[in-house]
Image (cartoon, rainbow, N blue to C red; front, side):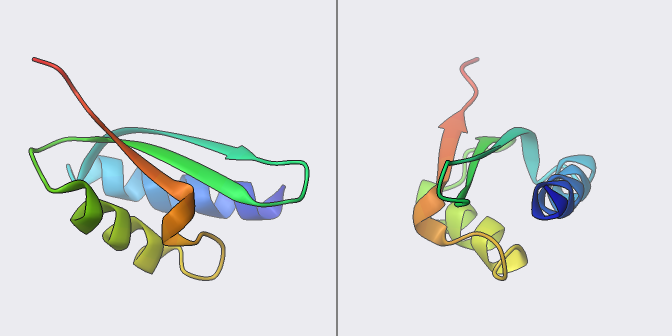
Length: 72
């Protein structure tokens, strides 16, 4: 649970800075953390996924980050 709070705190900072519009964090039964982020800008998914994973590298692998684009 501590990791979830850490991840949520880091993502909240990314949201406040305007890098992402929103996020959702969940944990699987085998303790893997999954992150879904909503892109604030029209950025390539891979770029944003790598930025999130780099910021959370101790807790989240890039393969566990999914990017959703807001529809306008």
